Length: 184
Image 1 (spheres, one colour):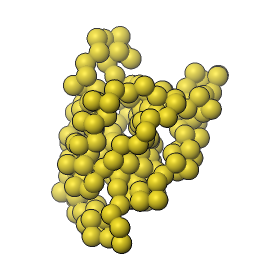
Image 2 (image 1 turned 135 degrees about the horizontal axis):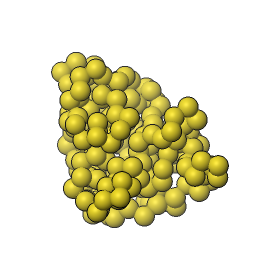
Image 3 (image 1 turned 60 degrees about the horizontal axis):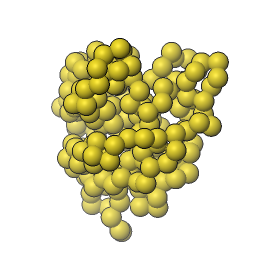
Image 4 (image 1 turned 120 degrees about the horizontal axis):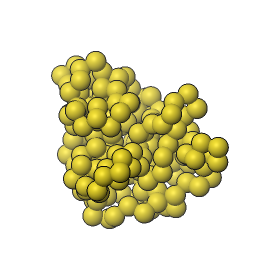
């Protein structure tokens, strides 16, 4: 079988240097090859006028349609504020045990909270959420270990408190799935 990749699909204006750093770090954390796709426009079709936010499920549908044939997983990375109907906002969403996920940089950016832009903080938060959402695509649920990347983050402070690594239990669950991707 030919080599398969995790793809990152930039949606909107995200610096190529920032994207390349995320690609390299995602590849290192998951130990799977990762590729960047050509950026596409911001997902205006998913905008909800009443909420002033973007419906993440609509965006996930488009991400799925754009998945290359050699994609083991595809993650959309956007700069818009995401929601699902039952929550005020989300940092990201994934298909549990499916191929697609999305992460938004909007609330991971210090500027959203009225502070000065800090690329290092935004980068660390984005990396954690990418690893988290890709964990869901490999079937992982939220973890009770507060340092595990799979712990639930409903506030940006929780993103900051957790690590970018899977805990021992989550690593035991995801490890064989990652290994199968490497050997298939």
